[in-house]
Image (cartoon, rainbow, N blue to C red; front, side):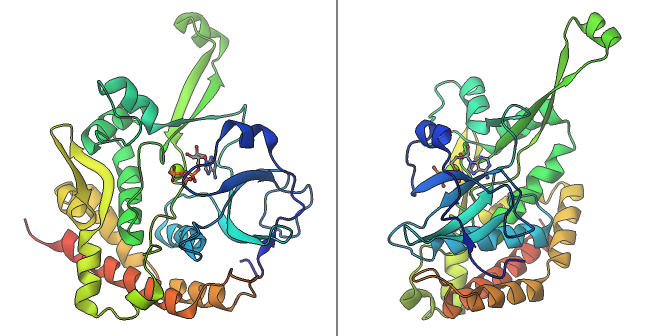
Length: 321
Ligand SMILES: Nc1ncnc2c1ncn2[C@@H]1O[C@H](COP(=O)(O)OP(=O)(O)OP(=O)(O)O)[C@@H](O)[C@H]1O
Ligand SMILES: [Mg+2]
């Protein structure tokens, strides 16, 4: 567990990546961890993404760090993410470990296959990014069991209230595996390509990060519920119904699949809110550089929001059709 902000001041910049990736929605850059990191949980000599908050929302980076903790509690794979600080530039942000090794695996974002299978796919906004095509493609490359992993992510997004799992915020990792000589001769190919889901990354557009303290501290339970019920995934229902799936409605949609329903209910039963509360308190108490602290009010709100979301998710999965 991190006991202080990770100081990235002396971490070497990753010039290659910074040149290839222009500035996105939020200021971010990639760097390499040192050969001998101070913290035992940091992977040595490894690419990391350092993402700062948008100016309007200074505490935003905490959403990504806390979402990672929630992924651990829910048993969903996300890239490790920590609170970090650049002393020289006086910047705080979320530091996440790269989830693959260049040359060993490749990341293929879902936008790439949507672009291929949906004619005229709107690559910019992903207006045709939908669950039916996603499911069909995932079945094809991963097999039918993928639905459990995919919907564990969907539940994760419901719990954190993620509204930004767009077509380039998830995807697959591809790895070329050499075939044995006999198989290679038969298939007339030297390699087989193995597919898996990439860890679910970019989880910071969530946990009410866009709400100002003055607003959420004044909310009664009704206001909280109205906020939760307005939450939507980026994914649409189908090519013929391009409305974004409501977070809670997505659970109504999937609960007819009894295997997935039981898995999600089990995940919710095991979801340890006390452990989350302890983590949040720990983050509030972490000595922070100027402007980098997580306020107690926000931590309490995130706990209240997540507790209520978990409860509503459970109720929705238990409703009778
Ligand atoms: N931990 C990581 N490992 C590997 N690739 C990553 C990682 N984090 C980000 N990336 C890559 O960098 C891109 C930009 O990162 P990210 O999506 O986190 O930033 P963003 O500014 O929030 O993006 P947007 O708001 O446009 O979705 C991702 O689409 C992904 O391709
Ligand atoms: Mg992104």
